Length: 362
Image (cartoon, rainbow, N blue to C red; front, side, top):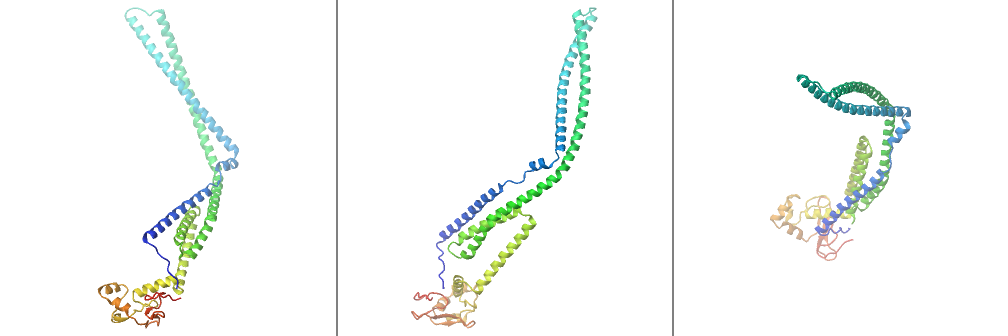
């Protein structure tokens, strides 16, 4: 019979699991850095693919149209600026001409005439006003022509953009395929790093899950399993991830079930000792759970749930455990209490040490 592992004080156990959680978080963090380093691998370059696969004539024509549109827009902007300046000049000339006409009208009302300089200024201002009006009409005509040209160029650019988009379709499909392949490769690279670590963690879990370093095994195993699930969810399609997750969960459930069945069929020493200890505490046969009817308990019926209330109200437990006679389960014929060969007192037959003298049976 193996000795159970010491549990230690509760604060020590609390620190163990606290640091185990810390190890799990830090391990998950470290694995995240490794995964991000793998993500740094250069993927497909769309600009390079477009430059190599798109027809150069289409590209040149689109660029030429864009340049013509820019030139037309600059011409329209310059013409609008010149027209604005001309409008200011026309407005100034018109004000000056109105002032001279008002002066001429006042002079005529007084029976006088404008001086030669005033007449010359009025004539020049009128000629300038008419010339500016003519120039403004020419600017409007040129602006109309430029706008029509710009609309035509814009229509050609729209048609060319449709042609370019149609020509880009195979390039986009090729880029999407290359990007999917790149994501698959990244996922495979990540799993190539993570899966061996997960297998090692699984091996340690199987071998060391009940040992002194169980908390460390659990912490690293949880971090690795979580990171593997994140990678699979990120790089593999949802339908594949769903089936993979179900299959992996099924395998884990089957493995746990097989382990439990094996534990029941061939229990380990510590698990068996715990089962025996709990059964003796509840006055039940550890093998078949038939009530141990010794002393006053021969006349009492109980269940594991009602036993505590029964013992709390009476001294039946002390009387039953204090009876110094061997006892065999009448249901399964298992010897439950026997005579200690060292002190010849009655001891628990299925527990490793005698509660009277401390003698240990091998």
